[in-house]
Length: 304
Ligand code: PSU
Ligand code: MN
Image (cartoon, rainbow, N blue to C red; front, side, top):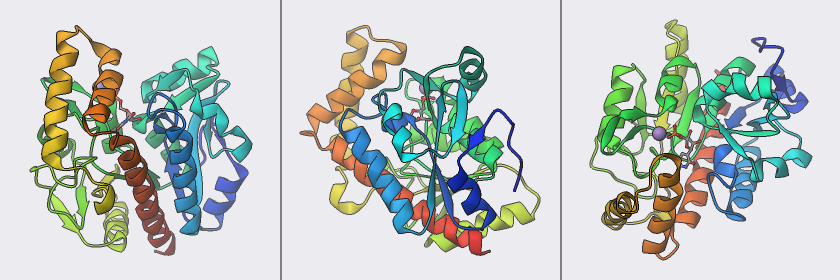
């Protein structure tokens, strides 16, 4: 096992699983905080993702900064601290969070990938990654660079739903990140199963994703692999319905003069209203499904 920085605390349960070659799946904490999902859905998302990983014979390695300490794997008694996190910590905020002793920093995908890689965790599950924004191709999430840098398999249902998916996929090409679609020809669009954007490589099974990650490692190539998984059919929302809702919500946010961090919550809640509240259960279902696929990949990797 790699030795993480001494500043990073890896839980006993995660360390033991890694040493014994049992599957471990990292989770970010932003989606489980009120910054990612409204209460009490955030708590339900966390427990369903952990249960999916444990049902698959794995150990969940939740990443978060608690009292200035970056953590990989938590004791269940600490889970509640994530829910009300005051700050979002992307990878670049980690040194700030440590130096300033942030009480609770909710990790985004980029921070979580850094911490997972440091701890030797090879698979990570989330809902949607960040990407290239619609209308501002210069606004690119740090998630994409982190996917390219850290040698971790990320399992997601596409990108945050109101991003520019075509540009996000192109940016991942520029960065050299393999992008796989599990039983899909389309890059999944988070709440919807299709986007009209072709996924670069279709795969049929979790075992195939693990074989590609293993080959990448044996080639001596560092960096991550993105496995995209469409939301399960029963919880999927029609692509056209979502797209219209997003366009309307973005236009309303612009008319209201919203900028920066204020845009996301406003847009998410407008899309939620426009779909009769279908987005929150959809988000829970896709996150749980991704955790289930991730533990299958982690199990296949652990056996390879
Ligand atoms: N996707 C969602 N909801 C979220 C996020 C992604 O549907 O809250 C979070 C993840 O933590 C992701 C982050 O890493 O947003 C990306 O934020 P930004 O666009 O600020 O890089
Ligand atoms: Mn952004």
